[in-house]
Amino acid sequence: MGAIATAKQDRLSARALALSDLKSFTRTCYLASLIDTGAYRRLDNQPSRGDLAISIGVIHNERFDAWVDLGLSLKELGERKGGLFARGRRLKAITDEDTDIVGSYRAALQLEAPMYNNIVPLLTAAADHSPNWSQTRSYTSLLASAAVAPTIKEAATEAPNARFLEVGCHDGNFTAAILRARPAMTGLAIDTDSELLALTKQRLNKRGLGNRVETRLAEPESIKSGSYGLITLVNQISQVPTDDRVRYLKHIVSLLEPGGFLVIVSLIAGSSAAAASIDFSLRSQKNGGRLPSLRELDQLLASCELGVSHREQVLPGESLYAITAYRGWF
Image 1 (cartoon, rainbow, N blue to C red):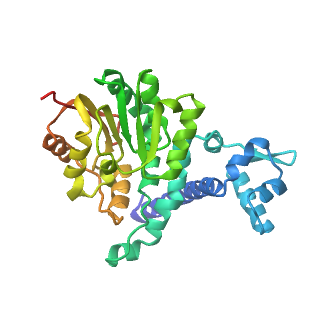
Image 2: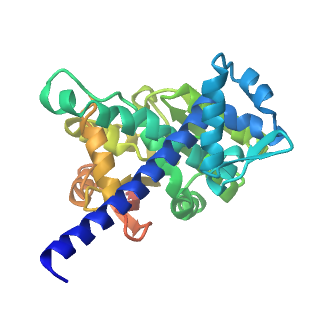
Image 3: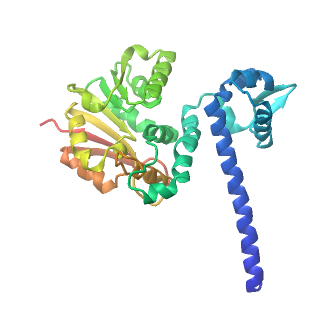
């Protein structure tokens, strides 16, 4: 094949890839729009177009019909005997209230799209920053919850006392895992996002665990005293300004009982696309966060006089680590 023919073939291949990327992007935006409008919550009842339009407050019916038709063409929506239903696997998981997946698609519109849409001022104007969607990004990171949960459960069962502090409770998934791992366990779960706290309460109450944990809208600095056998930090270190991390972690360690465990879960600065994207979003926010390196985490733990009993790369191919550290008895 000559050089001209090769270049033509490469261009055709590139166009095919671009069209595939565009379709994936359209699907992502569409699923995010179903979440943003709340339409996905109505699909279990297989509403008619008219009923769905009324339930989400539609005033532009032609636009609404085109929006529904797009969902049908993507094969995410189905329509049978005048009723709409979830057809695609992704949308079925969303309608089942898989909060990890809901958070992932929500972040596509709330974090990724605004950040890249404002790339010029973001890179060239000192005063302009990407919206601070740190909780949404943290929420999205829970897609790896199944891989992280075993580390947290093990620390819960081996903690020197049955009292825990969860810094950043997200949607309550890890809270429930801690409580189930050790029936005597009670504790305090805090977050800075009221919506996530509400989801945590809902999840725990639904599972009959709500009476064993207090949920509180708070920063960890507001917790002035305690003696916890287990403290968890899932996707929190990266959101703390780098020059404040030692002080931040020392305060948290002061709440840990001697012999107690601190579990840190974090993406690590590395070569994966997911880590690079999250690091870029963190650096684009006003709080000055960024992904830590493994060396930095080691230095942070050493500065707090913590030993490390377990370290694991919990997702093959991704730089997501779960680290269990412990406070000495002396």
